[in-house]
Length: 156
Image (cartoon, rainbow, N blue to C red; front, side):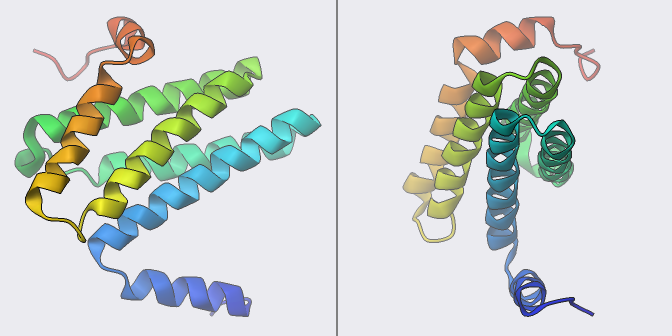
């Protein structure tokens, strides 16, 4: 049973959402958690920062776990790599108390959310823009440098 009217509304929204809207909700939740972590970093509230980072990690882990690698192919794999990268950056941000890493993850999440906003309301050519945006993010020097050192447990 929801504890408040807000919780009841949120529960109703989630239960009635289509799969694309659920992904959007997850992105918004992750973005909110990263923004909260940034606020807590600035205020010096270590416990609250850790809690917010953990929440963002949990949401990104949920997004990563929901990928269908059979159907998604290369796009799914690239998205999974990007999620892994964001999780590493969040852990670094929390450990090293780096606002820049939080800002980077926030920007990546915002870009992905923007792409998902177009999915479901767009035609196929616009949806391919999502893949182009993802490919562009994966080509960022920060992402490429990080991936050179990332363990490749999934490779042969």
